Amino acid sequence: MAGEFLTTVLDRFAVSRWEGAPRLESRSGSHVLPVRTADGRSAYLKATPAALGPAAIEAARRELCFYRELAPVAAVRTPALLESVDDERGVAVLLEDADEPRDAPQWTVRMWADLGRALAALHAMPVPTGARWRRPNAMGDLDIEQIGAFWSTSLPEVARLLDRRCVLGEQMRALPPVFVHGDCHTENVTVADGALVFCDWQSAGIGRRSGDLAFLSVRATPAGVSVPPVLLDAYERNSSCDPLLLRRAVIAEELAILVFEWPNYAAFANAVGIARVQRRTRELARQWLRTEALTAEPPGA
Image 1 (tube, rainbow, N blue to C red):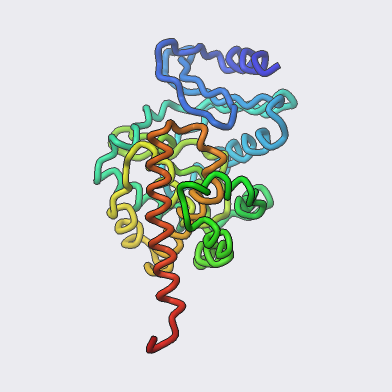
Image 2 (cartoon, rainbow, N blue to C red; image 1 turned 180 degrees about the vertical axis):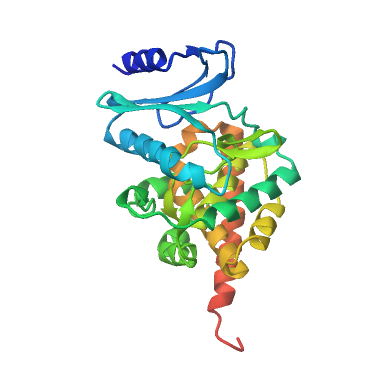
């Protein structure tokens, strides 16, 4: 059924697979294909068959809604929506070619600074209304045993972090909610004609700005890349939020993602990448716990 939906969409949009083009990543299960239109233009097709289940279809419809309603007024550049399908067989979008993403090690300091400015603009957009844009709380249902088992030999502080996860959550929520991309990493941001183009809006909605900023580091770490300070510097210069609360929120967010969520995705990384994530998590844990201990000291201690 999934293959039939893809074939149907290819015929309906009158596009053909672009053989030899680089494959695009899709951990959601959707088909993401570089294609050629009937008049020879390059584009890409994202097809989500109903067989993937209700959650996948809901995410695909959220992305389609974004391209139809919000992309025309978005504060960042996005691919143009060329065609779409939404019926009982699935959801598909045909989007203009936004060029190829660059791996995190290929990002320049200027690109990181541009990304900080772009995210500040995105987060300053009016917050949309409607249930579609409410995002689930990823930390709401944690498998404590799995987390403890994964980090038992590489993160001595894991028990303390689990005990203090409410404090992490409070710091992450210290700033008002904003409209976020929701899956912000370098493979979802391309560079076309010198400008950043934000792709893959299936996770977009109302959330924490620290999530977009921290997830960049989470995804870059396995490749051995440290996000440079210019990202947050540029964000702060173009945002009205409190810089101290922002930086505390970003540290708490990255630490929470790595400790509580990353074990589910470790299978996507090789042994070197896992070791880098473990090292980064230990650094963040010690930094955060040290800061918390100093903050908790009574005056004059």
